[in-house]
Length: 182
Image (cartoon, rainbow, N blue to C red):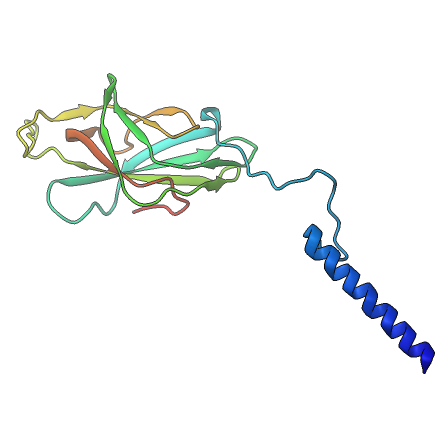
């Protein structure tokens, strides 16, 4: 019996030492951790890694005079990267639009051929060919917009289904998202 109790005590002592070591080092028994390794998040997507396209949103916000567009960023590189933040928006001819952010920005990891999106909402031009702005301002129509993302460059993009037409030089923007808006 003494022999059995001695083994039991030794096993308990070994278990206790391993538990203390795990608590101090953060490494569980039976796992290995290479010296100097850390979990590094992927880098920001460089402009050259992104292909950008845009189209009118299927579901603009409720209310008259409001339009929306979806901007898609596709990672065309061979490396996973991260997009984060709210876009800057500039009309062709270097006309910056005032961007009002909506929602909370979070990092979106984009694998090769993966996609991320932002949704832009703006005051639409009213009327037909001689459009007008309800505010009385002069309407603006752009064949392309320059959409920028923090640490990921600026991208000139045309709408697949028309021109960017808006009033008041302002836009509301969602942050980059892993979920396609409609």
